Length: 175
Image (cartoon, rainbow, N blue to C red):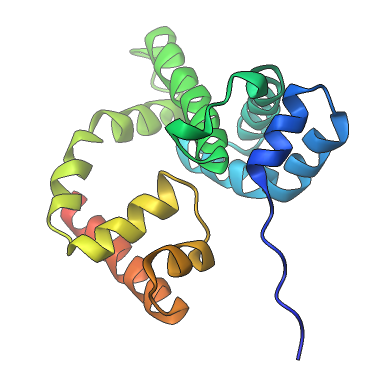
């Protein structure tokens, strides 16, 4: 029987970054960069571009860590927010430059997905409140399945099933 892995303390690492401790940034990078890369890749649909966005996100995380306010949300969620905003800003800025250019489908597809994001709110409202909460905690707050399970007092397998089924329902609703 193995011991459970201790939860990574994002808030403490951000506070250390705010004090200029480079090792804290390295630890954050090792802990979260693969998942942040996944977020960026889903948005911009280009690996090299997503890697640049994650690099820029960690620069913003480093320079903005001292201003992070845990009263406004989770540290991990803030890191995801920084990454998503950079990716969406890139899409928005480059969609203006590339309007009418037929050879840039990656950017325009991602921009179209962003334009339809208002539909996601309608689709989220169709979900059971517990399932909606799981989706929000996972994709907005940046919580792991285990953290959601603990927060909601729900078995881990149930949380995973709710998220999987809810994502399917959201895809169907979004069309």
